[in-house]
Amino acid sequence: KEQLDAGGSIGELAKLGREELLGRARANAPRVSFVDNTFSRLLRELLSALNPFNRVIFEKRLNGAVAVVPFEEALHGILLPLQEQVGQLWHKSQIDVSIEHYVTKHIQQKIFSAMNQLPVAEFGAKVVVACPPGEEHDIAALTVTYRCRVRGCRVYHLGANVPVASLANLCGRVEPDLTIMSFPLALSDDMATELIQALADEVSPVSNLAVGGHGAIAMRDVFERSHIEVLEDFTALDHKLDRLMRQPSSQA
Image 1 (cartoon, rainbow, N blue to C red):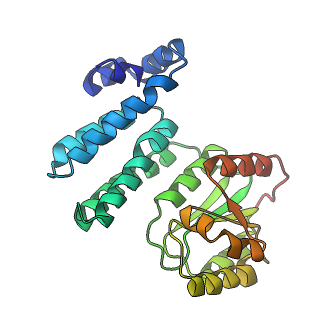
Image 2 (cartoon, one colour):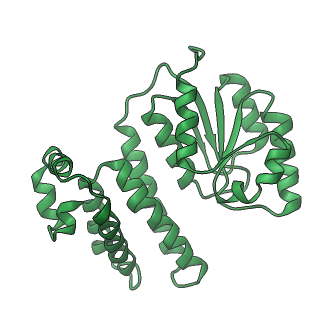
């Protein structure tokens, strides 16, 4: 990122190779002062390539940047902010839903590609990750899955729109150490009460259950009344996973 901030092109950085770039990054630490500027500039370039839509520029910029930045930094510095800003543009009717879907699919591909490079865990904590019924946005859930995989968890990623009964059925069969549900959006009071009661009745008896996301935080009171833990952010998730990985786990 330092090299990008200094004006190096993505193509030039790609030729240097990942190890050389990481070595330069370590040699030039601390880096915080210009990291935000680099990512902010890249995000502006990516968004400008969406309106008017220029597929070639968008994909070259995105692919090139992700290739030369350690993935966890790319995920939180580029991919997730890009998803959030594109979602905001769609809500303001400044881009078409087809463009929002296009960007989402590219982000999903990047996360899946990174996870495919990780070893398949045979031991370690078992974690189920899912979105609630009706929730089709699963980028945050994918991010949770990635962070669990990086820490050596055995992860069952169920993705978007998972019925409570199906979630409870799987948890009863695999006996996870933790089930995490992603709530990007808050539900209406009636829907929240009904869904959270179902989770408390069907999932909590068969798995330790935690929830996260903007929606979960907005519905915190309802979750806490049902004794379901709300994770504030990814740091809280990491702390919970670290504690979980230190505990004995079943070997199935």
